Image 1 (cartoon, protein in one colour):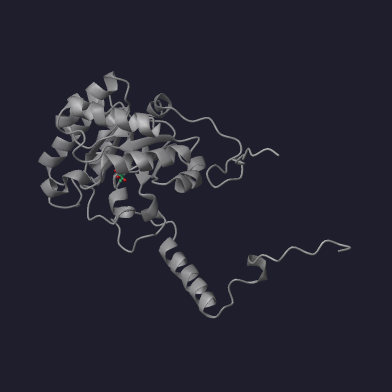
Image 2 (cartoon, protein in one colour):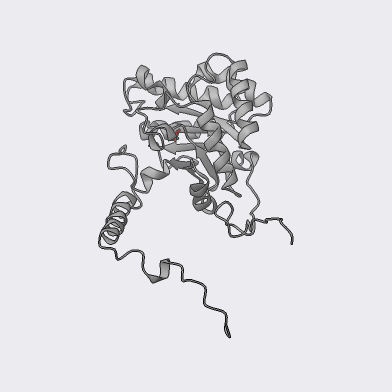
Length: 291
Ligand code: KIV
């Protein structure tokens, strides 16, 4: 008798999509400037990636996983190990979307060389198509260094959560003329350095519009403007998993409420012994006929 054990990947939890779709590419995303809006959401797990993949063009393994998955107070304590583990899971769970992994705080700011070591590890260990890093003019040489060495980079300007201590909070940016001009210059520098796309977060609407008009790469807004070339949200925010979110989040569901209701129903049935029912228990083998 054969002892070979074959996993039916067409129906296993690991890989439920029977016919893999062709994955979009970074150049295809870059070519969407001014065209069909880019749909981007965050994903941190293979299962969420499976659920989002067909509707999204890009999946971002954001360092927001620090708060969403690990309950950290900010993104500052997120590590390269965390990003590699979750990045690989999201790549395994998706077939169509371009997967981008955030570079965590401290892994890229010191020098372009340091950034290359961290980014190349992310690329090798996850199979992602590129990385995202936060920062403006000061990060432009790093964006150029990585881009010239085959690592596609998505920039991130405006409200940059890794700089929360320097910014003094998570409030909207670009309210003053001087701050708006600085963010516009940051966006231009990152795009000119070779970023294939640019996330613009938490800035006043006219500034997001101006950045989108100015830079050559697609601008993906979050708390920005409908004039951007695409939009991104943290998936758990838009699904209603959290009671408190930023003003720019639109809730498309109330998963927190629905999970609480489902768990309440389960707990009640366990306590009243009405779960499991006959459908959820195994019947003994029927005796062989004629026995
Ligand atoms: O970490 C993240 O999820 C992000 C998005 C909010 C853009 O950077």
